Image 1 (cartoon, rainbow, N blue to C red):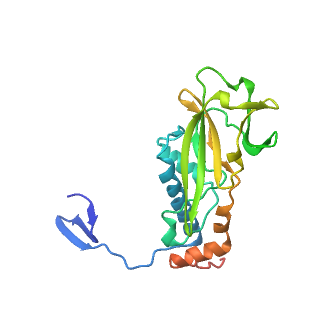
Image 2: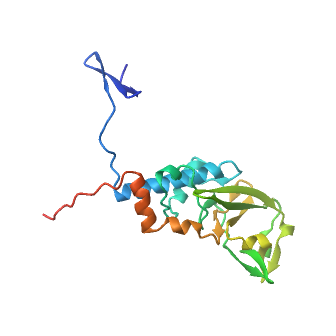
Image 3: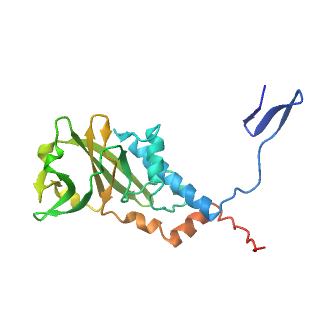
Length: 234
């Protein structure tokens, strides 16, 4: 055997022709500096989002895997601080959640009203439609039951006939676009290329988990933060 094997708290390795077995269990408290804590919270939330998003059809084409592509983009999202017992299954609807990444130009989109009706307003112009071009509409719903908070994703193909032109740009109209617990992103598909898009939403529930109070409470549930030693200048 070359190298070492660690399992069930035991490390086994070869040294000078002899097989050595020792305990690999460490009782030293895991470091949890502010920087480490923030990055771990980001990672946990990004993974929670991906667990929901991976069950629907997506296009992330700019990295070796869709997972790596999504995680790289999701790292830019605001940090949400959640207590340890809730963090694994908690996910939050917020602006900027990535749903695609590709080489087509991004579609600028925002929520508003057209003719007094709630709408998803885009900067796609009339000439955006070409034969074979598709539109995928991603919808995210925030669900909350007590402290159990999570999102659900869905995707459907939108026909060009569902859109209407307003001031020369395509829009999607519907009362659902006024719902503060939903978010949307319209993705343009042309063959194996897509536009890089992220969710737009009116949802603000996540904001209460971004405060200093939320951070302190979450950090305490993980055993507190590790103080960084002060280094005096030489």
